[in-house]
Image (cartoon, rainbow, N blue to C red):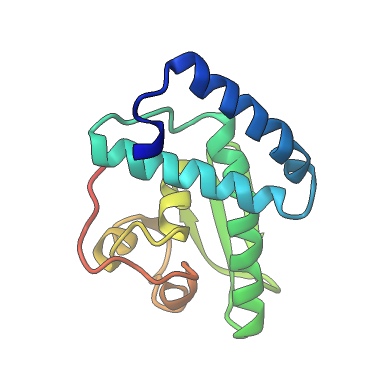
Length: 152
């Protein structure tokens, strides 16, 4: 931001620490999972824009999936769509109610980007599905999907 342009790195770190102390309690609140998802998703947006990919298989990406997966589960149940088994590098998760009618095998990073609306239909369909993903496509992201492919 322009108001920080002339400040030293030391001054910026002091401001960062002060703001972190104010916000730290939020991470233990119900809002915490939302904050983590937002921070990690937007970090990767910035990294993509700069052409500097970051760690995609770490605990931060896995933690960032908590709230988006809860929201996906709610959307499937609200629309009475079939359950979906999602297989990630650290295990399986079933979203929706009942026996899964299909499965998706992908990485935590790719799932985070899909759930966050960072993939277009073609990219989502190209993932490792064991059935036609059609029933789930309209609800995978609460923000909709991109019109064009985002290559990261």
